[in-house]
Image (cartoon, rainbow, N blue to C red; front, top):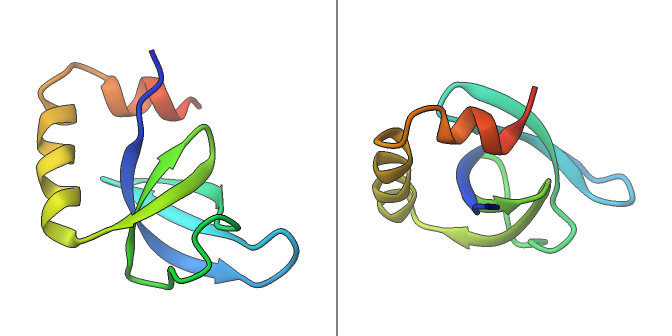
Length: 81
């Protein structure tokens, strides 16, 4: 199963393709931000297989993370090592 995981952008690099580091409840991973050009540092995005696919507000991100935390190791499993 593949999930879209919400995370908060902590850094952005404007190289091609546009990328950055996203914090997923304490886990930080590099993410491609090419599909969310409007997203910036501090914004929350939904990430699927390493690509930010949409921007969400902080409340929606928090609700989704709460559901994922209820599933043992869901976030770590989806994000990999």
